[in-house]
Image (tube, rainbow, N blue to C red; front, top):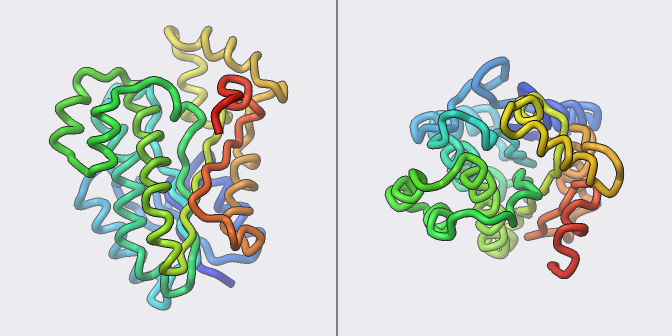
Length: 253
């Protein structure tokens, strides 16, 4: 039995990942703002430090895997929280748990998005990757909620690519998934949004496989990346989007 931590465990993709890992016989500790084994607010530095401390206490012999599902969508009225949770909340846990993961040659799966390649603010993205809070905040005021979201997910995927070789040398595999439209409580808010709803419905109709994703689709992909079957996979971004990215960007690899 391995030991795994899943953020955003109370709902959506995080809950589905927990269910998948438990069914595989693993020990899973969920982390969320409520209704979780570890209750923590990943939007603040103190919350992130507290989360790392509690995880290390729960797994004194090391950690087999970390899955960072916690996130805030682009329609949130508090745009400033989007990069704090989506990017800094994930990065802080990976960095804070690096030794515990190396102890057991563990694996990390970050949750990016197939919206990551969409246009955003380059300076905002570069500030995130550099960990420059001040520069990020200065650019955020000029960025829409959706651009803040897609930019945070692009920054997270690029950070993973930058860091994967160093972590691999320590025996830790870093990978990410890029889900397409997946039915969760968060996406339901967008689907029913008076401004964005009609465009979302049109978007759904364009998915090549003919349906929206289900949380178990993403959980199964994450389960593979955590498993021994993916032992030689490191630094990869796996699109799980029904073929949408291939349709929109057929010449990008």
